[in-house]
Image (cartoon, rainbow, N blue to C red; front, side, top):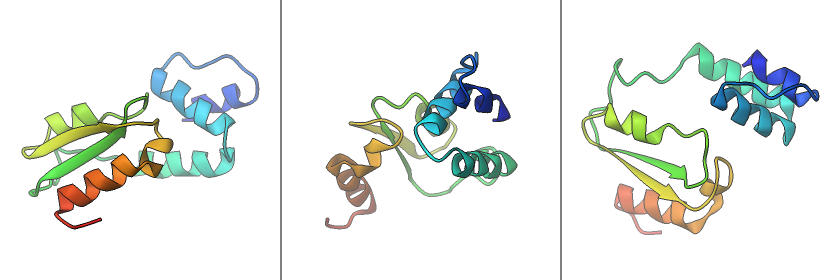
Length: 110
């Protein structure tokens, strides 16, 4: 994701939409920490073809999240579903809908 770095320094936006979304997040946050996170994710990407979960899986994503690939990932797993909640890549987890969805999926009370 080094391609996102020039954008954070006032350069042109990346052509790739994922890199562009990451560049936007970096510009609004701690660039060094986000780049380290991205490097870590790139080193061990989630590949559902390898070691598929054998349990029901819930992907929760923000309705305004340009980064989430929840639908694609859920389509690759045998017992997965996607739930969209209000918010974007960051704010979705802070909303009560996220918490409710997780607790309902796990079968525990909030």
